[in-house]
Image 1 (cartoon, rainbow, N blue to C red):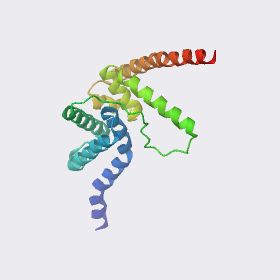
Image 2: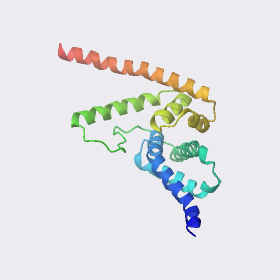
Image 3: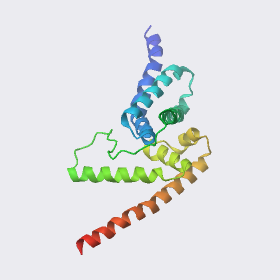
Image 4: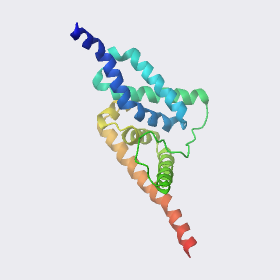
Length: 186
């Protein structure tokens, strides 16, 4: 009887482990599409509802790509349904617990995160998707490859060029601020 109980709890345990591991990355990922934290949470709730219905038939090795693909599809459906421009909020998505930084450090981090999100939005669609999956969702190249339905080599190409473009854009973004500082000091 105990072995039967263990067998019966395996899908439940897998679901809880998946929820614990992927809920926050999925919310951050969906938030990148919606610009609204509550909408992102609703989308992720739909993803986990769908997971609960299909858990028994899913390939557990491809669980992360499946989750992020469903999340992207739900976010795109949400966007089409609401027919609105995705506006990035100025608040940082603070889902992770952290030691309380100094107020000016927290503000600087929020400003930096907002600026990076805005720059990510300027990337071509495929680069933006790969960068989000890698750096916001925390997927590895194989998982990104499966989620984007492309080769691992193409994932590397997309991420490399996306990061290079972000680096250039970041330098351009910082340059006007440096000029303003020089004029303010003079």
